[in-house]
Image (cartoon, rainbow, N blue to C red):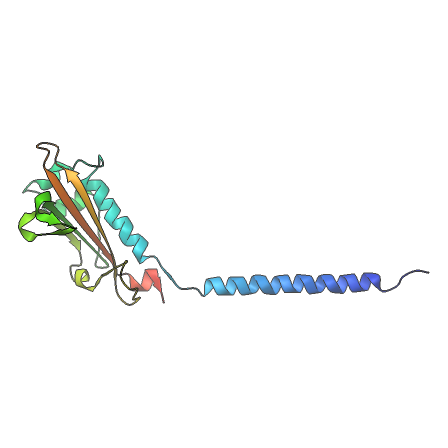
Length: 173
């Protein structure tokens, strides 16, 4: 005797399995596309890293041309290729004497040179990424590097703060 109906049950089972798989894929796509993302922290790290690599091309020797009194913010922008940094960014670079710094905090009397690019009002608005996340504020990254002046082996500390605002473009909240 031939068995009838066995192929119909298998085909109904496969339609059910395919339907469950499609629903699961659709739910995963909806969950991931509705997730919030914020790339300002990564962008501020990249901005600070670019400034650091320009100032310290050999890893631990400071590019001494930046210590010249003739170097201005415009020269720093041109030499480090920060063309048109705009109002959505702020970059602050301070170079201190090593002796004036203690536990990551440097005294203003030890400041040798300072460069700033972009919108200075963002400096006070930015929060460091290590602090509590607040999506309505600008995000900042801070880097400190110990370097050596090659000509006289003087030890220096370089503080770099990069702040990114770009709320409409980089932060989906």
